[in-house]
Image (tube, rainbow, N blue to C red; front, side):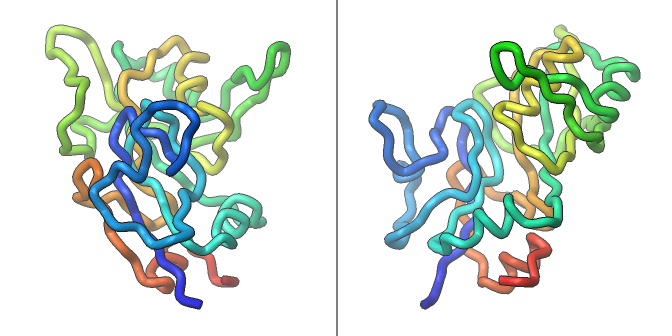
Length: 198
C-alpha cells in the first residue's frame, strides 16, 4: 500500500483536525485535495501555528511518540516583554508546570536561546510594536505535555503572544506560507525524522 506524507504550515486559529462538533476552521479548509485516510500526527493548539505533519500511515504516531528515541521539536515564541538571562536559564534547566488541579510536572532540560530576528518571515495577525518590549525565544524540547511551551513561559513570568513550530527533528517548515503544503516521499519523511525501523 502506498502512503502519503505531508508538511503543512498550519495557520493560526485553525484546529489540528479534519472533523469537529464545533464550528471552527479545520484542516479540511486548506486549499488542497487530501487523500482518504489522512490525519495529523500530533497537534498544534488552535492559536499556535507552523509545522504540522500529515499522513495516511497510521503507524507514524506510534513510531514518533512512543519510540525509545526522543525527537526534538523547535519553536520560535514571541513574548510580550524583555527576557532576562535568569529566565532563559530557568527554561533551559526545567520548570514546574501544572498538569492537573493539584498536579505539577518539572519539564526536562531544553535548548533555549534568544533569536533576533526570528526565522519566521510570514505575515501574522499579531505584529509587535517597537515601542513595547518584546523578544523572540527559540525553544527546542523532546516532550510535548498539553500546552507545554506556553505553560513553561508562564512559569517564569512571560506571556506568549505568538508560537510557531519550525521543525521536528530534521523536517523543517522552510519557506512554506501559512496554509502551504509540501509532499514528501516516504524515505524523505522517515529520514527527516531519524526513524529507520519503519
